[in-house]
Image 1 (cartoon, one colour):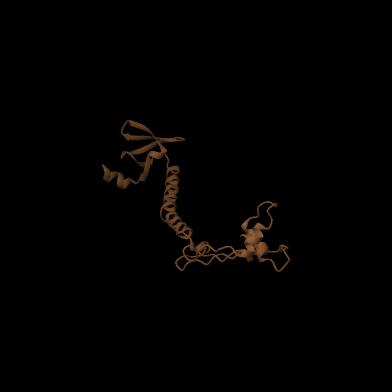
Image 2 (cartoon, rainbow, N blue to C red):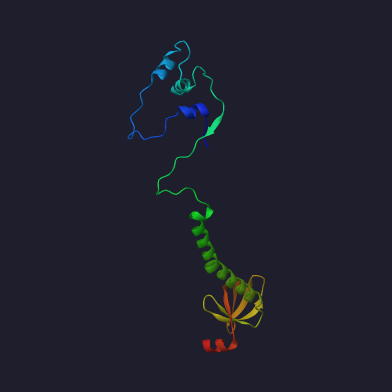
Length: 174
């Protein structure tokens, strides 16, 4: 907020656009106040106006302050609203929808997949991401030893297992 002294507030002309009012001519009191002190440092126009606006003979400046009022806004403009009036609400809403529709279901599926892989033991039939179906011969720390065909064993990483295949669906695949 801008604070100005009472004397400055009284001396300020009302705000108007240059197109509406011409520049005001100096009054005789203002001209006399400016030319009265040629030996003193040059006075500013505000000081001269303060001296001219002072009551008769008493040129003391008042020390109080006045809060300057904000200018009214045009009809088309809105004054600053609260948090809910801004674009933040829409952005937070979209982030929330995106999280619950996309991220959370994907996290659930990945959690179920990790649980399924951790439960695979020797003898289970698995479908791998490359499309091979095989029987797990040995489970290791980070990989499985899978028999793809009789006598053909391949070591695959655990993340390459897509799903566990039941006996009926493995028979149909052959």
